[in-house]
Amino acid sequence: MRYFFLLLYCLLNLNGYAKQQSPAKQQIMSNETEEVLSVVRRLAELMIERDTAAISKLLDKDYTLTHMTGYVQSRVEWLHEVEKESMKYYSAKEVNHTVKVDGNHAEVVVRNMVDARIWGSRNTWRLQQKMKLEKRNGNWIILSSLASTF
Image: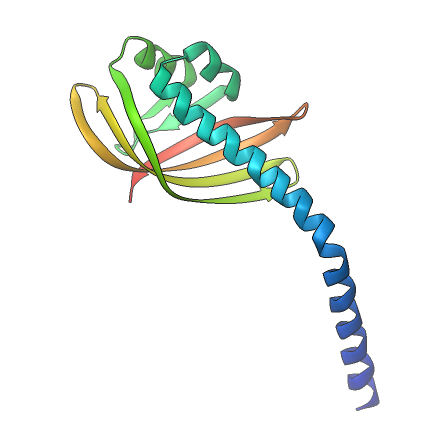
């Protein structure tokens, strides 16, 4: 029984220590989360602006976009579709998002109402994108995106 109370005392003290350390850690995580979210939101803006040069800087050279149909599109192919407007984005209104940051890696799930014409069919799509990012040389780079509806 004595060991139980000793263990309980140690755990409570560790929990108190962790709470003392958490504001600084939370601030760092909050900053990273905001940076990641900023990159994802910037991508949506650039898609609407059809600025493929700027989009290209946000994407990894091996970036892939997996469409809700299951079709996996390369970075080069997708940027070409945006340039020639076979994928034309008119607006995106964010509904919600989640961001998980783990060191230099992040995963974002963002839900948007996207007004777009995709391969001739225009609609306001309930688009969910699950994106993976990596921090390189101080910048967050989008590695991949998996699109689905919500």
